[in-house]
Structure formats: structure tokens, C-alpha cells
Length: 347
Length: 269
Image 1 (tube, rainbow over the protein chains, first blue to last red):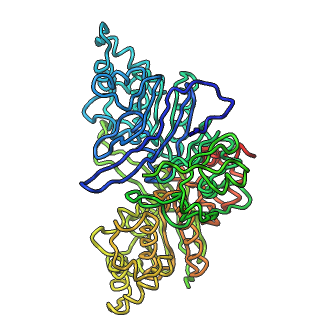
Image 2: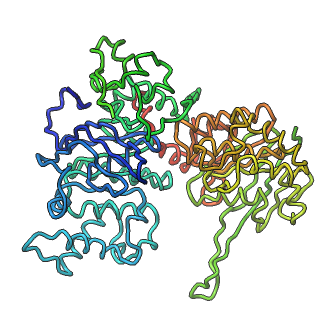
Image 3: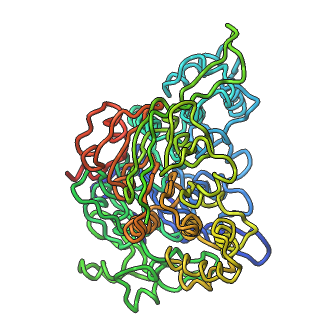
């Protein structure tokens, strides 16, 4: 029996529910990279959740899988993704396209690559509205303009932005345009994939502020994918930590910050500090993540883990309740007097 | 051991646009505007600011890649802005650079051993055999051990953190007195950053290396430097001891920079 890390007192119905999601990359015949391994994740209606992990841990791949944007060589190999009662993992063609309107959207990392260099901002909005128009809807010039104007104002851009081409905009403005485009179809779930990573520090701050405001005002469900634990903990209600394709901890952000359970989360927190503190001591994590083309025996973090025991090298622990969240650690589960974690489904 | 300070004296760099404005003039931008500071032997000075604050232009002038429009940069008896080819080459024995992007800073076709042997031969005039021994020593210094496992590797066979260690080893090859490090950890995963930052701090201590550390990341500046200059639109708006500046910022721009750092730790107070 799997549990995900939603607080026990949270009775909001899940908008999105993923179970046993595996994503595999097959760049060449015979080569398989298991990028996402057996992920269970629930997102409640209106919840703001962070997904954090380091390069190559599968966080963006998972975000793409949840919004059904995986492209070959990546492929959803197993698992179900239920969105508002519909299993979207198996949808395709017209049915999947219909989910883009009022369903789920993704904001890409680089505003520049997400935009068409020879189309103005208003043209982008028009393309989206027309491509997803419902029968009987007419997106004429005036209607498109009105809607586009509303959207750029929502993301705090000046009205003139509508006539601009992507190269005429700064990085921060482009990212705001990408957010406006995601909002165009009024999705109920938006996945933000490293939305501020490519931006300057001060701009990062203001774009994150806009995302947070929009989420609060409009009440959509948001999944914020980032390598920066600081940004995620500050912005979100709940944080999901990924390592080597697996979710290793999922807990309310505050709890994760003050009392992390998984040794990886702990080590990640040790890589941060307040630059204003009296003493600053940073600890890295020795070693590097495992090769995801191999079958992993045991816990994927075991080779780098300071708490490692024999059982860790043999059985990959499933998530078990610890505190108000869940974590996948034999040692910590035993220390807390919790039940011994079951084995995660193996590959 | 280095014994001479680097002196940046009223340095200004003006870039002039190629295109004429409607009035017929050219637009002039002072990327660096009347900046003065000193790096004493063995000191580590941090240069912080947002994009466009002029920090990389300043680094380019200090390493001799750009010339100041006015003002001078002196290192010992050398006026850096006047150096030409031969002089510049000699200068680069003493002043080296670590770049932001360890993926772009290494030639993908050169093995680690070759990359590190080049400056030994070119700047120090070592023979192939001498350079070989030096390469092993350098790899050892930056923690890529055992060295023989790394000399034959190409950049794509290394992780990001290992690549940045190779870039640092290359900068150390000529035994420089000053290393200019421009955002050396910003492209690395957080778990690897601490290792590289600790390495830089250790090199300073062991070799008496001076360092100019350029970053927008205040936390890494705190770990590596003991003095901080805050740059805003080409001007130094605040300077002082690193801890002092971060704990008691005076300039509103410094306050803004500090507050821009996501700081969940403030919540736990």
C-alpha cells in the first residue's frame, strides 16, 4: 500500500494522482535509461507543490510525463496518471488535446526556446486560442486582442508587449510571456519547469512573486520544479524530493526544512546556509548519483549515505509515513519506530 | 608566494554603440564607472552584483582581455592596460582565470592530461616529461585522485564538478599569484558546490593565492571571500568585510540583493 506525502489533515480531493509512473529513455537500440522509477504523487486542487532534485534526477522528465509532453526517445513505460477522474496516461490525439484547455499546462525553463522568434506575443496568444477553440467560439481580431491584453497585464507586462517579438524582450519578460501563454487556456494544473533558473537574481525574485500571486488569486494547482531547494521551500506548501528517478521524501515544506527525514534531504539542506549567519559551514555530498541505465539494487542513495546499513544495499525502501510526510529510508523508519519499509517495485 | 597587490585605480570602461542615434551621435555606456580597489597578496575579494552591473567587464580588464577607457590597473610594476602579446603572456603566468561554464571552458577533443600540460609547456617552458609530473601533481591538488585515472579522460567523461576541478587545475598550472574566478560554481549542482568552494578556500590558504571572486551568489561569496565590493550599474555602491556587509548592509541596492536570496532559513528564525 503506497502513500504519498499529503498531510493527513488535508482533505482536499486530489486533482492529479500518479501511481507507479516509470519513464524510460531509449536513445538507441538496447540502451535503456530508467529516468523516473515508480513514482506515486498526488496533487490536491489548489495546492502549490515543489519538486526538487539535482541534475538528472528525473524531475523535469516527471513534469513532462504528468503533462503528457514526453517525446521520443522518452516514453511513459508504466503507471497511471489520473487527472480529475480521467486516466490521461493512455489518452492520445484529440482527447489529449482537449485536456490542454482547462486541463494541464507546462511552463518551460527557457522563455526564449518556448517562443517562436518570428511571431509577436499577440500572435502567440492568437495561435493558442484558435488551436484550442471550442465549437461555436470565434476568436476574431478584437476578441484575441482583448484576451491577449488581459493576459499580459496579469503577468505585469506593459500593453506594448503584445506587438513585440521574443528577441525584443528581456529574459524576465520572456518568462512572463511564457506564463501568460500557459494561463491562456485557463488550466487547472500548471507545471513550472525551472521557471526562474535562467534569470538574474533580482528578476528571479520578481517572477517568483508573480507566480505565487497568480496561484493564490486564481487557485490553480501548481507544481514548481527546481534544483534550488531554497526557492522551493520558500514558495510552496509541500515539497517532494527526487533522487535517481525516485521520490525519496514528500512532506510539508516547513516540516522538511525543520525536520527532514531522508538523509539525502538532510544533505541537500546542508548545502545551503543563510549568508548572513554568524558562522557559515557548507557540507557537500561526496560521490555522484548512480547510473540510471543499470538495475539498482537497494536504495539508490546508499553509496553516498552516511547512515548506510546492509539492508540499504539489498532492499530499495518504499515511502513510509514519517512525521507529517513520507520518506523512503530503512534507518529513519526504524529510528522513528515506524513499520519496516516494504521493497519498492523493482525493475 | 605573491608579494604584490593588484591595484585597480579609478578604472572606467565605456562602450560605444556602433549604430548612430537619430541625433547623429553614438550611444555611450559606462559599463564600469570610476572603480578603485586593491587585492592584497593572499586576500580574497568578492565582486557581487546583478546581471549588467559590470562585474565581468571588470574581470576582463583585470585579466587583460579588455583595456580600460581611463584609469589604470597595476600588478607589481606592470600596467595591465598597456600589455601587448609577449607582456600579456608573461602576465598570465601570474594572473589566471576560472570560468563559469566548465562545459564550455574545456576543449572537448583534448584529454585532461593534454589540457593541463599545455600551460606548463607554454607558460613555464617545461619539457613534456616535466609537464607530465606537474599534471599529476595538479590533479592531486584539486582532488582528482588517483591522477592516472583522469589524465586520459575527455571532458564528456567527467561530471560537472570534476570538470570544474580540471578548469581550476589548469588555472593553477603556471603557479599564479592571483586567480580571477567568474561564477565558478553557478552551473554546478548544490551538492557539488561545497566541494569546489572548499577547494578554493584551501588553495588560498596553502598557496597564499589571491583571489577575485565574481558572483551574484552571496552565499558562496560568504564562504570564499573576506572582503566584498557591491557593484551596481558600473559603480561600487558598497564595500567592506564580507560578513559585515552581509549582516549590516548600508546601501539600498545591497539590501535588495540580500533580500533576493531565497531564504527559507529565515522562516525557522
